[in-house]
Image (cartoon, rainbow, N blue to C red; front, side, top):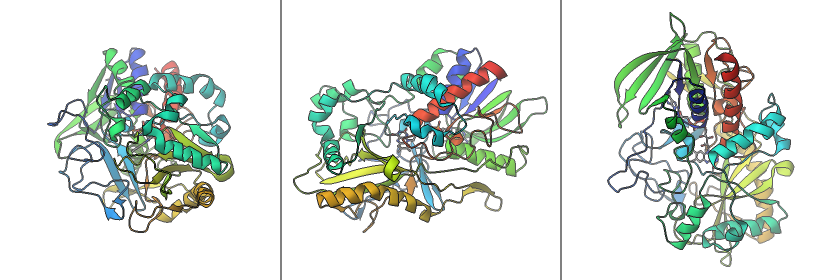
Length: 492
Ligand SMILES: Cc1cc2nc3c(=O)[nH]c(=O)nc-3n(C[C@H](O)[C@H](O)[C@H](O)COP(=O)(O)OP(=O)(O)OC[C@H]3O[C@@H](n4cnc5c(N)ncnc54)[C@H](O)[C@@H]3O)c2cc1C
């Protein structure tokens, strides 16, 4: 086979589509499920407020990012199943990732943000910004179906009351407030609000999949991939090993999984070229293991390094009774507070879609956290570890406080302490935005070709050195579009 792609997220879909359009046959291998068949409730995806067997990757208890409400733990037991959201625990951090055909696009918030050009040099220092802002960011935005909310609707709809409160508080403290583009279908959301279509964002769907409205990769790249007729996709198949084949190319070993996570078959295929698109964590874990165990001995010493959490940190604020945030909150955030230049933080005004009035404002901040961790092979345990430390979130908290301490003092309000535990202000134990581990121009050349093994490529978030200054998937897609164009032109 000419090309095997490991993973079906943003990087994998860009690679598969462009290769197939260039006439190359591609096999995509995805450890998660296809997510194309409704469950007994008639829905493909479980609701955010009602997690079930579909919600978590091989866990017997939910691990909700907001673990508590009014101080009470809200996690519950669920059957072990190859569900959609993986809460992967490392020693100092839980890394949330999407599992299934479509990768993170299945579970993410849909915020589709291009970094400000003045910040791009820190995001991808070896990449020419002119080509990114002239060609590849526009291409990525067009393919992903990115658009912005109608400001007049934002100003009046009940479902963004929470974001208008966020705007008022940001502006009264002198912070720039921006609309954030998304991949949600705004006309669909308007019809949800009118009550003429089945609801998705307006009943809080997000974390475990959107049954309507959101343009995930299932609605964008994947139909185009299928239309080429050149791509096969194997779901519930997990790549375990890649090593040079005797006759050239690479032998790839793959475990077929049951929906309870057992290996039901082991397969071996040979491909001329292999693209690692298993996500920052998935790609890094594979490469670190394959280098350490001797399967890919020539990978360089940069493999596994440069991993960051995009500076993610969450917090909530308790508002006064005259500032209700609304009982109906769109699950798709579409506004942010920009204090990047002055304070190193960009805070999304996020929903708390509980269905009841909480008088709370909730935020996910992306901060300029400088800490970078490394993946390493733990031979005795037979697994890859990450050396992130819980205390490394402190710079993120300090940066987020440049926004929220000021807002609290202007408004005379306080932080919520009941969302992440009992008397815990900061959600500093997790990230939604893993980045790095096979950094561009370090572990690979400047277009993602892995050093030491010709025909192996990285084409996902592992290439980006730990921070994008905004939500990452538009940058991952744009970089993949840039790299695959070069690879097709010169390597194939
Ligand atoms: C809850 C949540 C909310 C988010 N919100 C946003 C947002 O609003 N905006 C934004 O820009 N970003 C958001 N993100 C982040 C965004 O989804 C990721 O940055 C993006 O999906 C990463 O793309 P990728 O191509 O690197 O990998 P992924 O999209 O992670 O795709 C990798 C795929 O590879 C598969 N895989 C892994 N290992 C193997 C293996 N060994 N064999 C076979 N398959 C494998 C995985 O199952 C997965 O499907 C969010 C993420 C989460 C979890």
